[in-house]
Image (tube, rainbow, N blue to C red):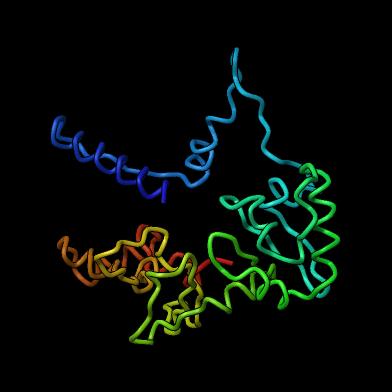
Length: 238
């Protein structure tokens, strides 16, 4: 989303330059640069700066006892109680007697309690709300659970945090799964799922014709490598 905003700003700057200076420009945006930009606040040190206390390292399972991964008796889960915090200990019988522990002791005790029951037990004990438990699985399983087919006329992605759309008739010659555009979900407007973009070069002949080139000239341009009707043999390079 941030990269999209960067692209809009870049495009706006190019249009202003064309209006003021009469010349065009190329507008670019970088996903990697936008990622660095959003983390920039954590990259500077100065006098009086608060300690950098974000959890890090290969063994980190979360941010404190109430926002962390735990292993149930049959699979891993994630406990999310950032707002309720210690109050969840009072309303879940399985957590009784843990209220006096400090955070480190609480992580250890919760790990032992969660390991005693399967995931299904904990979804019933901690019903979804301000506090919830979520199963941890593979990216493939997450995608498959959220998949929507592009030919389905009743795709609803507005209420979900994550959805994937399977484009069954993609120009590359096979189906392609893409993340649905529901990073921003308006309350009073529909989210349009765009179709796949045409293959690179699909409109080359049409554009050159509109520019006044004849069939023989176009064929020569393509034959000499000055123009192309394809970026690669397939829609997407491998």
